[in-house]
Length: 67
Image (cartoon, rainbow, N blue to C red; front, side, top):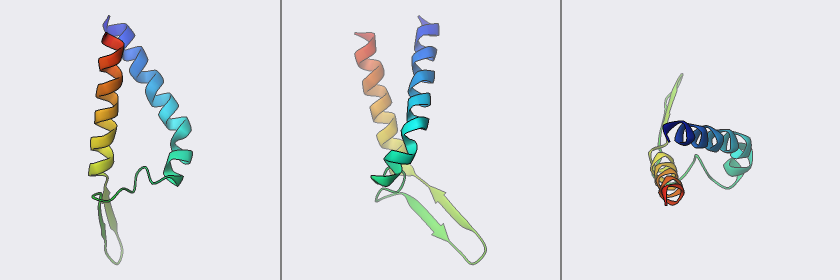
């Protein structure tokens, strides 16, 4: 059971990695609420809203696979 779950998570991340350039064009990764701090020589980016949405999607996918 755990092997199947890890396999599905791995497949999901592979698909997400392949689709990331297309998702970035639609705003995935730069949503309102993501923290961006830019200074002269450095910048800090923390995609908090993107992480929350990804977490919800992964939870829903795993929920439906367990049924």
